[in-house]
Image (tube, rainbow, N blue to C red; front, top):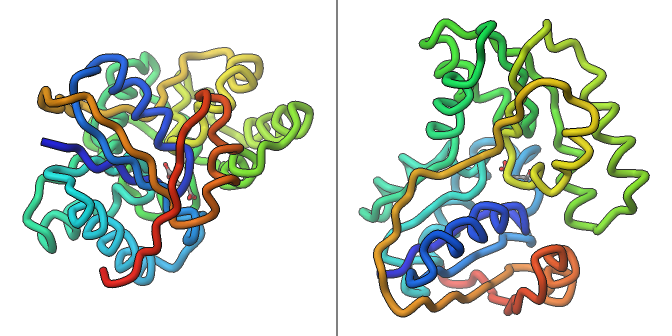
Length: 241
Ligand code: DGL
């Protein structure tokens, strides 16, 4: 049993590294789709096709179930599941539920990519729980994370995003798996609770093997992932999927 983990880049490593700690005897294949990054601003039709193709690639590489460790890809989890007949877990539902449980004043601030915000996926879950949503596009942070931007730029960008009107929300959701890479800046600038993207996946025990692939440049992926140590990304060409 092997879980295939998909993100547009290194953001999904924030989820994978937690899973590896909790389940050291599970197998994972991580796929960073750097060639198509960012997902957050791509037209929905093209993105859906691409996400299903990347899911197929993970299955071709040996994945027996999938985790979209990316909020934007999570929008197409059902389509991928139907196309491939493998279980696809997503991060939006468990994250939104955790946030609903954390808010006291029923107001949640959501920082996510443009596509995630526009989809209404979070807003719908919040509304069902009687919670109002206040959104801000944080897509610029994806670029900063992938390009190892300096600290001052990171802080400035977080400050700019959090200058939006969040209506007095008491919980902030980081609805993009790249954003926990900026957690110290969010903590510095946000006084309430912060909920990061999460998964409720319980992978099966196996040999504890992990492989890392990128559709982009392997050296650049290693640099962007340096905060996690030496992540041995290998380049993969997504041909024939
Ligand atoms: N990490 C992704 C997410 O959680 C996508 C970022 C992007 O490629 O725009 O939405």
